[in-house]
Structure formats: structure tokens, C-alpha cells
Amino acid sequence: MVHFICYPKCTTCQKAKQWLDENGVGYELRDIKSQNPTKEELTAWYRLSGLPLRRFFNTSGLLYKSLELKTKLPTMSEDEMLSLLATDGMLVKRPLLVGEEFVLVGFRPEEWEQKK
Image (tube, rainbow, N blue to C red; front, top):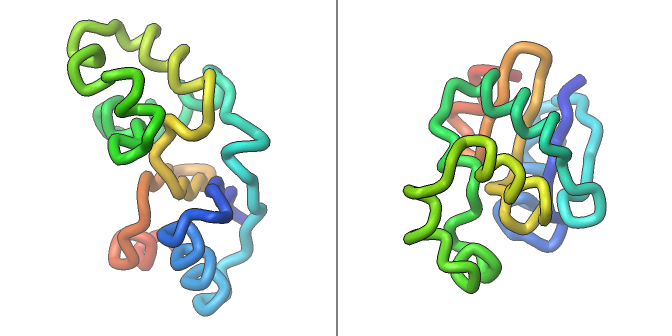
């Protein structure tokens, strides 16, 4: 069983959910807007993913743009970035697929196929 963290109104998240259902992947769904990830969760997922922390930001989101994070992130510490991500689920890139030994950020079917 994996954790599927998404924003149900997001079309990419809807496609990812459909993919999980069609491929028989058992998951626990979590709405990222109503159940924002904590700093501790984000820290653990970031470390497990092996990705740069910047990949966890929803760079196409309105909140990201209104906060002018494109220019601010390069000067922020890792701790500051994680704290900021924990303030609002809409800042976090989605969907997230979290297993015991992996974290996938965004929906890339070929990447998800390797983890099912």
C-alpha cells in the first residue's frame, strides 16, 4: 500500500489516480490541500527521494508565483524551504506517491510503472 498525496481538482492528479486504479495499485489517498504535509514528512520524503529539494515545489502554482519564489529559493536554506513547503499544500509539487522505500514527485507513468 502506497500513499497517494494529491489535489483532487488537479487534472494531472486525476490522471495519476486513474493510472493507479487501472494498474491495480492499492493506495491511501490524501488531499494535499486539506491535509498539508508536515515539515517532518516533507523532510523524510525529500531525503528518501534523492531529488533536489526544489523539485518539491509546485513551480506552476499561483502561490509559488505570487510569493516570487523563483527569485527567493536560491537564497533560502534547506530548513527554510522545508518550513515554507509545510505552510501550504498548494506549494508542494503533486501528485506524490510515497512507498516504504521510494518517493515519486509528479506524474510520469514510466517512472510509476517501475514502482508498482
